[in-house]
Length: 203
Image 1 (cartoon, rainbow, N blue to C red):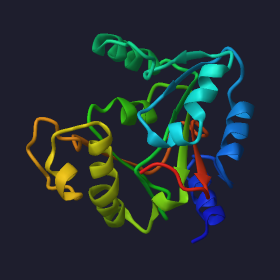
Image 2 (image 1 turned 180 degrees about the vertical axis):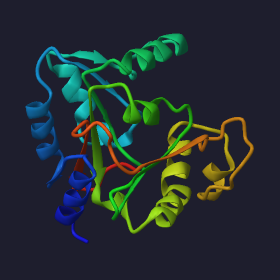
Image 3 (image 1 turned 60 degrees about the vertical axis):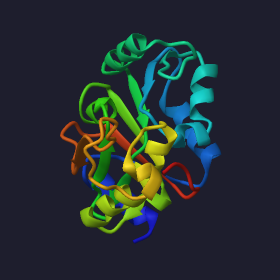
Image 4 (image 1 turned 90 degrees about the vertical axis):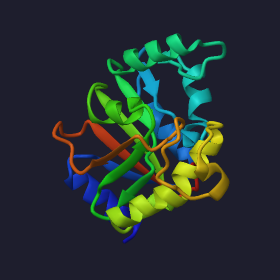
């Protein structure tokens, strides 16, 4: 299935979708979608840094709940997470999407997936073509082999997958895989926007 066909599947699931070529196109799209003075929040995502989205949000005339702002204490980060549920726009990525238009994620604290499902007025998911898989089984396998180990490494967690490169379904206190969610359809039509990108980005 090509990306344009998958975009139609997502749109039919009440999640409007577009196919964009690269990060420049993504930034241009977000500029059109998110107006000045909006409140904006983001989920934890390597993709957003690689595509220049964090820098873009910081440079614009927005009320940006910046979870990555230097010097934030853990308590302040939690406050940012709580404010994020009332944002006009929430930008994140996904660990995998299926050909049936399902959005599959693993989360440690749950703030990212919770905001995807409920709260912010609009949600924009930036998903590179490398995250497209056939079905839920392949999505979970991708998460075990790619997303979870790489994110555990990124976050400097002390989990077996950091060493093995594969999810061990561990009992570590640092376990990343606490929440598994599958979004199949959006009840509030047009709330979630899925931006499929040909350029590689994220895990």
